[in-house]
Length: 305
Image (cartoon, rainbow, N blue to C red; front, top):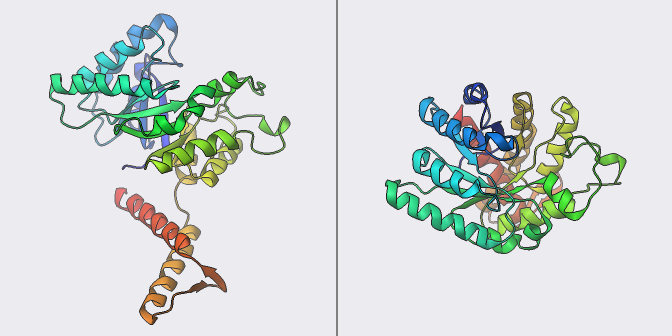
């Protein structure tokens, strides 16, 4: 699966932003029809997204569209019209506020019919956004509800509202946490999402960091997601892309450490020794697997450039 370090969320109704997003270094461009679009511009945004997808040269950019929620009068029309017209270009559709596996079953079947009718050969993937207490309670069954699902996404603002958490910033997207909680306030939901993702061979994507001028806060937020095992993070401003890409990429130190582990492992295999030691520390099979994954990720990045 292609890397999803940075997912640039772009308002669907603003065409000039689509052109800029196309030229960005974001791994994924997500044209948004939901929260960033005013209520009276929903249908205009849908038409604009279709026009932009069909009318611009996106080259090899990974493309996604976030539809409106299935509980709205716009969601099913977004899926139907966007997938019918541009499904051959889309990698995924992001489904917001997924609370129950039935939400995914509905989208899966709808996409089945669209693909049969239009002759699309490559399946359109689904990204399930977990944004509420109900969704988190059902996250394991959601994660295995369809073979179309590629990622689980943590929706921090709506999740906060659903559990009655205190609003600590204007955007509600991860700022000001230190002032209200002596630790990582979202450790539990994020950990539960990553476990469900990995148990079903999915990727996990973190919510955006709302204050796009606070680059140190962004680094801290991304660092916590990385520590929990997340693959990437949404960004809401082009100025956040390079930091998120760098944070979610193996560092030279990471690569050197992994290479030492693999070298010691290979030497142990050649000599018939079962135990592996690096710099006086014992290394087990789980560490060897981690090193292999990191080097594979580094190799993929190198091939892309």
